[in-house]
Length: 209
Image (tube, rainbow, N blue to C red; front, top):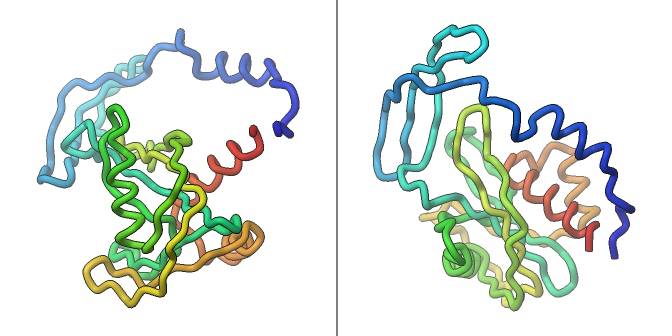
């Protein structure tokens, strides 16, 4: 059931006026400078020009070497409606992170489903009957060109208590109701940006049903 009411065209008009298709790109790339690249990552420090001021400066862009690849974050929903999250150690921030499972996948066709299924089984011991692509979010558009697909896995089953995974640095998993997850977010215990963005998209889609 759609509880959001009729679409407000004023919002569409405001967005169109602000960043519509007829608005020119304000920055052009003058020179691509690859600062670092390996099989997992490409870092560009490009020379760019402001189209209005003609001022040239350097801009950082982080991307995946393979443009057909992206991050895929899966929202596992158990048969009782609870959401499953993992406890995973993240070296860059030097702390444990409570987050949805994620994997690398292909953006073309349905290339996201198989790696998402395999990753959910490997990391959480779950299999899902229903899979659906909800959309995509930009991981950090100020620095990265990488997108993250948001995938819904419904009616998950097969959850088992898993020991600490030394290879993946996963301490285990926790199943939470929506209210319990909100409480962890309010307390600052769920701070993974991709997880929070995926949760926001999931709830927006849920309201539109």
